[in-house]
Image (cartoon, rainbow over the protein chains, first blue to last red):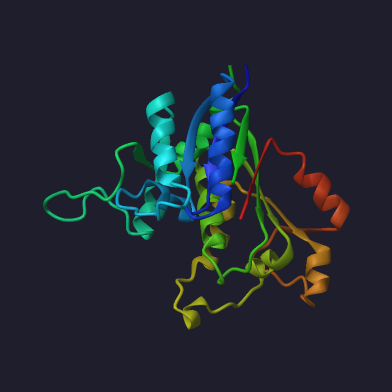
Length: 124
Length: 122
């Protein structure tokens, strides 16, 4: 069976992010292995713990958390991009974090690994 | 089983200073290079402005990441391609900030790009 990896570059408010979630859900439900999802550029905001998207809008960030819980899907936030967008797991001396626990902070090297592990890398 | 090295093309189609895309693409190129992956860079559309010499990013409150292009050779990234049609459309000469830039016509560019196993676009 072919393996997929995903690079997401769009913010939670982008329709492309919703499309990515649809693609990944379809793959996982059809037993296609997704080796991991790498969040780069504005996509790191998907991992923010304190997003409050209006109730009548698509709850992008909750969908990612659900995928992680249901399928044990690895969600990697690019550490440099996260920092640039104000996300941190070490905000002050109390070690306060604004990153959801479903996400892992990873270096760009993780993207290289995912690309090598997967038969196809899909960017949205 | 998988091969430890894959050919990766990084396609740039945005101007260098309007968004973070150019810097983000360059960061990815250097990381893939440092993991000894086979990396090629492609410049098309407004992306061709990224290779134009003598830019002053500090005038618009940006760090001069463009000088990092000169480091590509140290990461063994030697396949750098630019679309000739995009240069002509913008009235730009073949005067680049780095050496080894190969100018390809539209067909050559497309054929070369599609020979890669992975394409990332910025």
